[in-house]
Amino acid sequence: MQFFIKELAHNGGEEDLPKYVAVKSDPAAFESRLEKRSEFRKQPVGHSKQGDFIKCVEQKTDTLGKQPMSRGFTKDKTLSSIFNIEMVKDKTAEEIKQIWQQYFAAKDTVYAVIPKEKFDLIWNRAQSCPTFLCALPRREGYEFFVGQWTGTELHFTALINIQTRGEAAASQLVLYHYPELKEEKGIVLMTAEMDSTFLNVVEAQCIANQVQLFYATDRKETYGLVETFNFRPNEFKYMSVIAELEQSGLGAELKCAQNQDKT
Image 1: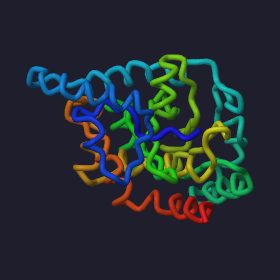
Image 2: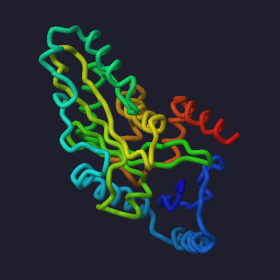
Image 3: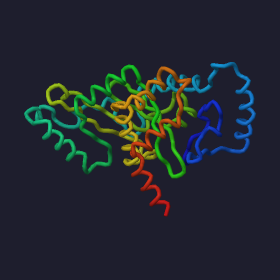
Image 4: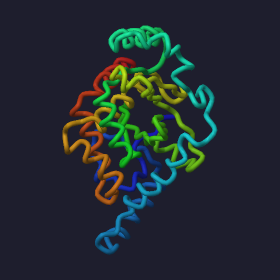
């Protein structure tokens, strides 16, 4: 079952969502939200359920990566468990990059080689803004995934998973970053593990690309969304994430594949 934007604590309710975003809900829940809209308009200025909701999400995602790992995930996955670090110390950064890419090319997973400067920017920003929201294109809309940094691991789980399971929500995608060669070679190696019952590789890649989109950007407005989510949740607008994703074109390939499957 696909879960789309639903009960996202928008201040104004469903009418604030653009028409290109699918909202699936049952009639009873919809009527309940209609009643709550009038209650909201009577609330004092400055009151925001969205802010409370985001704070709740952040509190619950603090446990991501600390829960027992789901099936298919490796606990404490180290770089040395993938290849012999000593054997590549005499290689150049470009040679190591090729080895890394060749190793994972035949594997059904996400991987990357990140330049030191870009990773340092991502890492420094993650220290002050460890939590954020990514939008994954679906056939009829978008599904939100919440990311939480735990050391150099970045854990993702669907927003609906947090809403329904709370602190028991398990990671559905983990990005592992290895900075062991950062100072000497100027690169950081990254790979991932995912729960294939929820995500395929193309979908996981779309989420991983958004880490660089939002954390490594030079565009003040784009990273500003991350800061707003972490420091001013009352002002955060979910649709801004989708707008940035569409403007970047990162979700275009996934949307195209989904449309082809549909025909």
